[in-house]
Length: 512
Image (cartoon, rainbow, N blue to C red):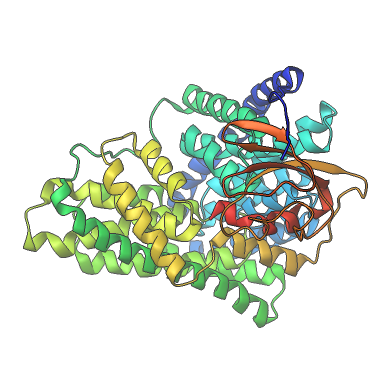
């Protein structure tokens, strides 16, 4: 069969513009995300001050104050419904053009609502809001620079990368997360601005907040390979807890919905629970950054660690299910660290592994994060960057792969996929895509893709689309209708933007 082989085209002007956009987004999204991180750190201090007063008069005052804050948070969510929760599924929906957030209202809601939630001590993290803040700022920049529809989506993805990078000082993980979980494409047109924006945002974070890793602890000694069976067991445990976390989080949202409570009343309930937790179990308040560092510094009793795990787990369900402005990344990492500590304390009496305590904390973090998000490579890199240690990649890989296998075997969907589906159903938002808008996307054909082994004219695509080119064995060519699609082919697809989600579902096996 004759093929028209062509030299792979490069658009220097487009790439140059992506570089410039990545720099601009890295600066502005980085600054806003770092500002949010700084504010959250200060509200941690304010929360500790609030809960230092234990007399009835002050408790009554906090009840009134928290109810007022809950009402304001509810008004902000009514003003911009897409600003609730972590914001990661919303950014994903934005890239897919299923929703259109008002970036100004989103920024106001995230900054104020997220600050109020942290003052009260809701078990929510800063990373999700940082990602949405980064994406919202990038969307604003795209409007100012008058970028087209496709470039705007690239810029929003890059803004999300900058947000996660600034939140955790993890530029590589920030880039990978945005490519894997938000854009679901590794096209160089989106990869270039993501990498640049992440690195610049990380630089800004170092410049303003100090050059240090997100956590104060790191691995000093690698875990010997003779203990790899312990890593595998921890992977199984982490996978099970990760699945439990996902199921509980979705169930909490359903219970809130079944309760018939309005959004504001849900927030009031969560804030009142926060007061109880703040006075009875202060260790569980906030995202848990300080908690996991305390666990790393002290060998707590197993019974206490189990209490911490259960309370933090249930409290995170209650906090996130309310719809408050906050994420789950940090609470998930805390649950993983505590799980690793419990596992270490349980097996340590039977063997001499005292010097590897931190190893198991870090392994637990990677294991549960993998089970929850279902992105093992990103989880490995994130934990590695956050702890500033590269001495445990083999054990991290084992625990992540096992946790991934457990979650997949139990057929538990990744949390952000579930949250994305829930947002689409609850908000009943229709696509805002322009009917005439087209997008360019890249996919890799796998053995599970429905069209593998079929010619282009035989393939039953979900919508009308154009296969602009196929890259096979390093050579790119323009196919004709008789060309058969083979496993491993990289295809460039042109289709209407409004069909992006359905077409991506069709090619979804590439991301498994």
